Image (cartoon, rainbow, N blue to C red; front, top):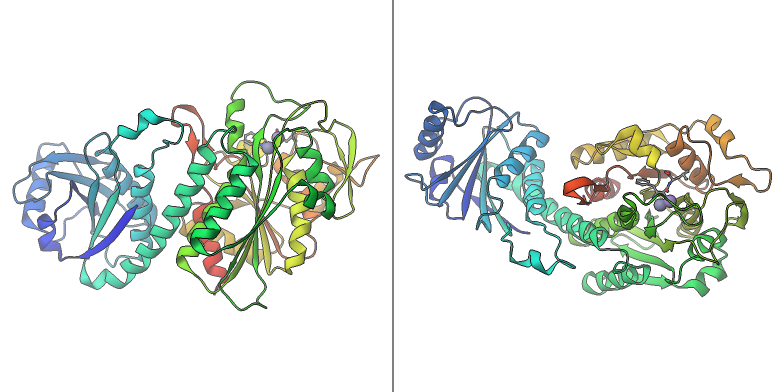
Length: 486
Ligand code: BES
Ligand code: MN
Ligand code: ZN
């Protein structure tokens, strides 16, 4: 998304050139200084009952007198909150959908002093509206999409706006990358494809990238990761990306992303309905890619390590079977009672690997459990944290990014359910509390550092007619990383 800021006073807004001018209004009254052409257009639409200043209302007008842009879109925000503003920009952009609108100018009026977040979220709304999956759909290439946004801000708001611009552009490119990778089908987006993407990201933005293959993973003793990968003909990859923005000795933040490029369930095969959606099972990895993409642009004084265990979960004559016992890199043994609980099996070895970086904190991100979808739906990601301060940081980051999460419990009582007669632990508990027992499993591998875990099974993608990746939780992760830079 090409995004810029133009400083302009309220009474001159109508002079803006763009394919559409989107006027977002908060509150019930129009500012007295507003360009009279705009005031008149709104008043007239109100009089005809075609528009009012209630949140969610939007109206497209053509050839309005005194307005340079050929289209004027009115969008009411109601409140001045970030959430209301973003929703209003989105509803304004929806009025432009399918039309030859490539460049939009957006003005937010009635918001009082503009915050950086307002601008950040206006850009994110435009970037979301402007994204269209095309990689394996040539027929989509002709559809016109929004590709440029100019934010019209008052001089007094310019400093905050510039901060929001940088954040919005960075997060938007991260979200777009995450959506794109996750949307790609399993036969395109393989573990090797993810490794290539990491190398590409490294080359273009100066990240250090290392890709471990099966032999290297064997040498490390990642018996749990290997067990998941062994049923597939597609070779596994263990991807390491490093961003060095602070002194060498500064303990890094480590992000770990689940990179199951397709989850059939393995021998514990999933039912057929909607199984195609299991191409999104690398959504955690995709969001870690996205966060790294945002970070290279924002360049905070911080060290970040990204770890991505990537493989397919397939049934075959070589696949791991229910009842098999494997030895993880940590030395702890695992009885695999259900081969469909594979995410934790690849993450646990990555969490052990993370120890070598002597991390300040480790956060893993995974489309881990259907149980989390039942608990929180598609609104909030499940969040687990080893301490209250980390939980607060993740929660605040989610709120600022409008990418919210909800803290879930880690009581030791839930541990009971992972008992096995044949290994140190089983890889599943009972159906009840499924997201929590998955987190308790991971916690056994995250004992030596501060640890957070995001279960994004409900938030990483949408099903149904709007099927596709959301790019969450790139926003949360980026805000979290920035908060760790102090
Ligand atoms: N990738 C799935 C989790 C999932 C399921 C995400 C549905 C989104 C929608 C994960 O690997 C899985 O299969 N989990 C099992 C665990 C169970 C066997 C303990 C699940 O949630 O059913
Ligand atoms: Mn599974
Ligand atoms: Zn899975």
